[in-house]
Length: 272
Image (cartoon, rainbow, N blue to C red; front, side):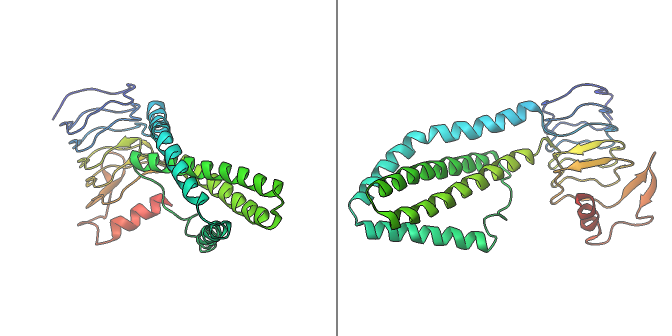
């Protein structure tokens, strides 16, 4: 067992990835933004620790998303020029037919609840892609605005109103994608215990938020009076039994191990 003492420290954004931290004292420490991926935390003292996203992590997520969007602006401008040149060579009827088809497609997706129920983006690359989608939809909305003005000024009232409807739909999609992006950033993991060994670890009084326990081993962990604040992940986590009371008391289950599916149901209860 290690005698390292990290108690009552601000350890934000520290990396402990893959380290042997068996028996280490992290009690009452700020672990926001820490990476314990693959670490051995057997019998570690995590009493009263705080997990979650650090400010640096949030800023980095936003910066990566914006940088990816800016990097593609030049390519988007070039592509838009080619697209508009292609549209300029076809009839207005065919152009309206294409836009009408897009409008019907997006309307169908919204009516069926497909777009509003797309899952949150779990990776940084996914956030970047989502930002690019927001930028593309914003460009489309602005472009449609000028096309609508052109139609009305040329006296093309019917096509103008049709494209106005498409523009409103595009604007609504932009708003929805923006909400999707903000929510994905907010729920992104902050403290990672991915694949960590937390056997016999003491998590009493800990405050868990944006903590990733996916594929972690929590067998024998003490979770007395821990507080699950939200946006935590337990996908693929493993546990044979827990202690619900202090000092390894109130074993759950009393004898043997969890029955198949029992641990998953317990996690689902925590996640609310």
